[in-house]
Image (cartoon, one colour):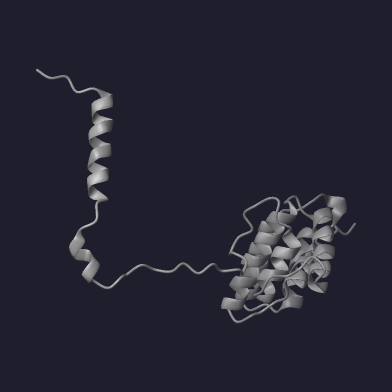
Length: 168
């Protein structure tokens, strides 16, 4: 009885893969179906890398083109993200991701909103004396209220009652 070793299995698998990779000469007559990959320079749906600047990524995503660090929109978003840092538990990267997600959902529902304004307005809702809030949670409430028919001012008023200063 022959004993099959792990090494034998690996060799057989490798040979099988190599044979599968061999070209068939008859294929040269057929038109090529090779696809050309086009690199998209617009920002992705999510800010994945920690080293990417959240304000530049947000400005690029919002404008639909690559933004430079000197772009005035980047400066505006940096100020908004700095304000969010004082109000929310999440990092600037997560605030950027949630803002883009919220803005996309609002736009799909026919309610286009400015990224910096969303960050600024949601930051203004939170009372820092009560502690930092969760930005993702606020975004969820904001979207639900807006989708339910409340306008921006009414939505912010409701959120201020829930997350704002406690009247004494």
